[in-house]
Length: 493
Length: 92
Image 1 (spheres, one colour):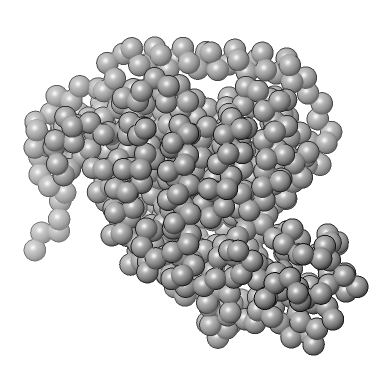
Image 2 (image 1 turned 135 degrees about the vertical axis):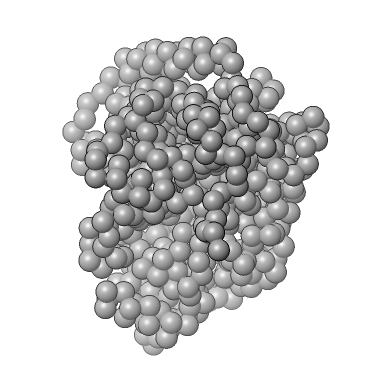
């Protein structure tokens, strides 16, 4: 059986290049085109539905420290509290601690729907710890969805067990389907009691990943594929990866930018491999979108992240704090059910409205990117200066579409050994490059002037309005003011 | 005859379950090998298992005290590049 893939619709794909319907227009479309049984599984999963990520929270528990492969973008040695990227954690938990932490967090953050195990190593290279955690949680917290993220090497052997614990969401990181490309990404794997290197290692890993993907799909388990975009290594190749994983039944593809800094001590960081620019990432996502639904809201979170996707409340829930917290889970479950029902109502009401704002602009009007400050719920509700990230939307005659996010805080700040010091305002403005407006609930005079000077129009007039409607409104104003009649202004000779 | 784990160990647990002799144990500040139990996998495997899965260069020593996975052997980063990068970071 092959699962229907988002955007896999002849009518939608007929446009050929340009924008694929799977990721165009209202983000509602992402979920509404799915068969009911899949939509039910993803509509409250922040990592699987762009819509859901405005409303629902997730957490990762770091119970899986061991890994069975090495990736050139990962370094098992470094662990900085200021860093936020996959593979980094502050404390590794035992399964018992992880269960306690999950229940405490779920009781304190009622928007939480999902518990994932994503490392800091590979969950399936730590099968006892991973499955003990799942086993306990499926009994004690039956209202929480369980999911797991893996490199795929040990996946075929784990499928049976995953199905038994009712894990219905699995993410596989697949960076390549060609062992020659793989050899540039994976220096070694541990396989059948040996360390295997080079092309041979990559070939085994790829075979296991593909086999695992097929086995999961055959069992009706939802599979998301993550890929790290490494310019010059697998950028063009990822289009083929996207085609193949879609054909095999993965329902969502998440292409993430490589994070590589020398201070991380990774191969790519030290060797000077660069990550992609936001434009390169967006272009590749668009190119792959012709083949399948693309995820664009991934925050590449830590293996111990807690909260909504854009935030990390891990500091509030360290083990020493959790030990002192008493909760009544039965009561918490009732409250959670109430909160979830209220969100579902909001979403349903939203869905009932015309899903995409009508664009009354001429067909040739050029598209515009705008940054939005939001703390969730799908509305513009954050002060410019409080935003740690901005969501970027593109408005065009076709409608408004979400295209990604920009972090404004660097991976490391506050320590002289970590990166250059720079005014956070300057950093923020640089992060918004390519955007022509920024929509927020409020903004101070100083950033206002600096943004204007940088060619980005600040706008605080749409506070508490729906993001998509506000972006559409600003786009229409810009069109009326005659700002969109020509291609982006280039310096006159 | 025994291998040993030194302080560069990051306590990732990978080695513990693969040891055929149950010689590896959790300890502070890092995992250790019980010299009385370690066989260097002789008779069980062609290569010592802990050193075949350990991701940290230099963390596991052979019985003569030499690193089984010397610098550069696992990450592929030439040691000179690593030194240059670290020196550059320190100089900031």
